[in-house]
Length: 453
Figure 1 (cartoon, rainbow, N blue to C red):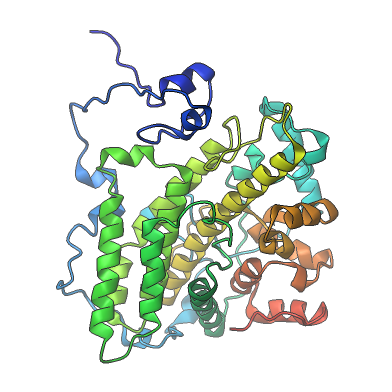
Figure 2 (figure 1 turned 30 degrees about the vertical axis):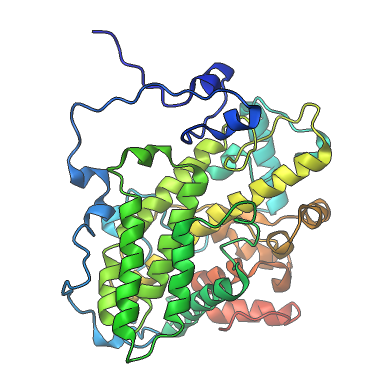
C-alpha cells in the first residue's frame, strides 16, 4: 500500500515553497496572486482518537447547559474585590494549575534579578540570532522596525525566582478592577491594552468577538432583578463559542493565527466577566473553562511561532518580509500591521496566564509550577500609535523597551519614567512587584500616570 501524503497546504503554495494559511475555498496567497488554488483531497482517519484526548477543556463543557446545578464557591467571593481567606499561606507562586503544567501559557510570580543591561542589547542579540537562521534579509532602512518578528523572540524563557514577599489582597483587588476597566474601555472605545485599535479595522470584527462585545454591554446593566437573564445570555454566548471551535471539527486544523487570536480573546473576555462577577453560578460554570482558555492560548502561541518562520508578511502571518524591490512605505505599513498582530498575541497570551492565575490564587488553588515568560513591547507610544507613520517615528527615535515581563524591574534601574511604559505592563507589574513599589516608581518619575483603579 502506498504511503499517504500528509500535505495540507494548497499545491501552488507547496510548489512556491511558501506558507499557506489553508483558508477555504482559496488561500490568501492564491487570491492575492489570482492563482487557481487547489488542495489535496480530504480523507477520513480510520481511527478517531477518544474525545477526551482532543480537547480536555472543550470536553469539560459538553454538558454546559443553563439548568445545570453547579457547586457553589465560597461566599466571600461575592464581593467584586474577591477578598482572600488564608492568603498568608500563599506559596512561592500561584500561576498555572497542576492539570495544565505542560501548557507553556503560564507565567510565574517572581522577579529575576539577573536583569538584562537594556532591551536594546536584547534586540541586538535577537537580530544577530535571526540573521543566522532566516533566509530573508531586511534593508537597513526598515531593519530597526522588526524587533518583534525575530524567531528567538517567540521562545519561552525560564528564569523564575521566588518572590521576596506575598502581595496583599489589595493588589489583587486593584488588578481585578483594572481588568474590568479594560473591558469597559473596549466597549466604549473599541480597543484596550490587550486589543489594539487597528487589530480588526481592515476587516469586520469576528463574530465571536462581536458576541464578547455584546456580553460586556449586557454585564454593564445587570441588576438583582435581571441577573438570571444576564447569566443565561452569557452562557449562550459561551456555548456558541465553544461549539463553533470544537477540536473534533475538521476545520479546526485550518485556523489561521488571526482566528486563534480572535477566539482566545473572546473566551478571555467571557471568563473575565464571569470569574470576577458577583454571580456564584456564573463563576462556577466559568471555572470549567479555564483549562480550555489556557489550551487555546497555547495553540495561539504555537501558531504565531510557526508564522514567525514563514516567508512573508501578510494579513495573518508574523514573519520577516522579502523586501526586494518593495516600496519602503509599503514595508513599514506591513511591519506596523505585523506589530499590531504580534503584540496583541503576546498580551492576550500573557494576560490569560496571569488573570487565571490570580483567580486561582484568590481561591487558594494555586500550584508551584512555572510555565515560563515571554517578551512584550513596553513602550507606550508604540502601542498607542494610531497610524504606521506615528509608529515608525516612535520606533526610530526610541528604544521599544522589548523585554521579558519578569525583567520589568530593569526599566526602573535604567531610569525609564513610568509614563513611558505601557499601561498593560504597569498593571502586570503591580502583581509581580507589589502595588506600593509600582506606585513609588510612578511618583518618583513624574507622577503623571496612575496604577490605581
